[in-house]
Amino acid sequence: MSEQVIELKGSVLSLTVLHIYSADINETKASLAKKIEQAPSFFVGIPIIIEPKIELSDPTFLALLVEYLHQLQMIPIGLRSKDPVIQEQATYTGLAIFPEDTRRPTNEGSDEKPRAAIQEKQPEQPAEPNYAPVVMDEPGLKSALVIERAIRSGQQIYAKDRDLIVLGSVNPGAEIIADGNITVFGKLQGKAIAGTAGCMNAKIFAKQMNPELVCIAGIYQLADDIDEQYKNNGLVEIRLKDEQLIMSAM
Amino acid sequence: MSKVIVVTSGKGGVGKTTTSASISTALAQKGKKVAVIDFDVGLRNLDLIMGVERRVVYDFVNVVQGEATLKQALIKDKRVEGLYILAASQTRDKDALTQEGVERVINELKEDGFDFIVCDSPAGIEKGAQLALYFADEAIVVTNPEVSSVRDSDRILGILQAKSRKAEEGGAVEEHLVLTRYNPSRVNAGEMLSKDDVVDLLSIKLLGVVPESQDVLNASNSGEPVVLAQDTDAAQAYLDIVERFLGGEVDHRFLEEEKKGLFKKLFGK
Ligand SMILES: Nc1ncnc2c1ncn2[C@@H]1O[C@H](COP(=O)(O)OP(=O)(O)OP(=O)(O)O)[C@@H](O)[C@H]1O
Ligand SMILES: [Mg+2]
Image (tube, rainbow over all chains, first blue to last red; front, top):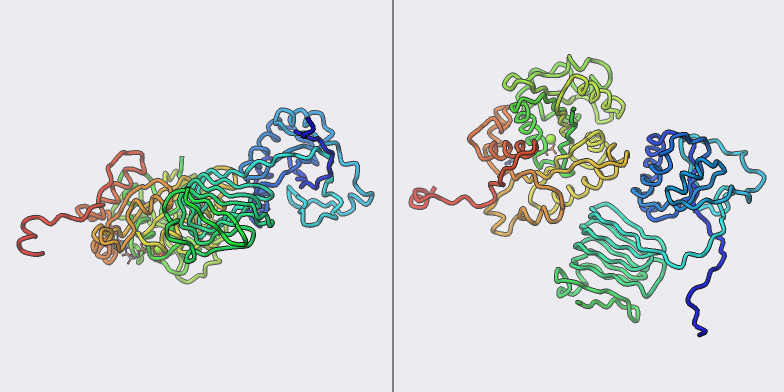
């Protein structure tokens, strides 16, 4: 019995930390909403660690914040705070507790001037000292991003490092993107782009499709190139073979 | 409790102002206190359709800018009790409206006990349209049965889900669809999308279908919301819409081609 079933490995991951500077949940939500608006698809599906920089007396603050982050399709996974009261809240909310950041370089604090209620660190700047490196077990499984509603014209959804499942329709003018596979249970009429990070095994499944464009790992077909027999005609699977998109009715 | 309703569409000329005027009038006829606000700054249209263009002294922009009080600018309708119009300015540009100013006006209307505050949005998806929908509790999305109109409505629904205050607070604006300028014979001929096509794509609740009708043009030329031309199909359609909006159950009408009676069949039209 040499076949390995699981393995626990320590690993250093970069995670986005959300600093909270206001104990007012509404102010915090509004500020978050504003931030997200600047790059809506960027924040979808990213794991978040919450780090309050002030005292939170409202016992529901953390739960409300977690709920709101979920609504924005971010994934709060943990809390970083020494405050036992907040730590207790975190346990109730199902958040992991991370130790206070001990790895911060000593020049920390010098440029920390919170202007808004929230500051978050953009993962684009990995050198940022506040951008917390944490040690955690490698998650073996990254579950799919599930969107339960219709994706409307002008909207874009990006499932980073994972699969995307859309239960509603993807309307004309909408765009869905995943590093992994894409499954659409409604009608796929917009653009679907799978295997964005170069994964050639990624597939697209659509229960009913007449898409503007389908693309896997950079190989694409436009509406006009797609064989009519696959349009509006039941479940279709799309995969990549020898640098060509292969469609099959299922 | 006051409700703020935005009448919006994305695409222009689909019937937002016609719908705003008729819905506001019918709500007032039902005993509600209603204010209808024209957000289409620079174009001024609602006051014409409501027949009050000669009574505008102060407008919405004046109130937003603090140059007049709300009381001075609200025009009381002479036909229907409880109906008030806040006209847009023809002479100012679009940037004259600010979010803070609009919020102040809406709050003041709420304090004055208005049941419904109906916001007639300008076309497009830019700032003006976003301001008109920002404070909405409910949205009436006006669509024509053609592809470009439906696409724009889809777009505006996405904006309602992302950029309204309700959405920012983690809630949702309640969405209703009004399909207007519907022509069943052209639908049957395949020249227009059917009601089912549109509802299927937008996946929101259908509030009602308003038929394409010359009566709408006649009404607006005489400065009267079409809903007051009681015996017309368009008026009936808007009355049904308001009935449903207030929770009543009314079957959908005006979906089939009008059957010509024997008389018309024999003698042409
Ligand atoms: N049911 C209908 N049947 C026939 N004509 C209609 C109907 N509804 C609206 N119209 C006509 O369509 C034109 C545009 O209507 P309206 O001004 O209400 O649209 P709108 O969406 O407010 O336009 P805008 O985007 O310019 O503000 C008008 O000439 C109006 O008379
Ligand atoms: Mg108009």
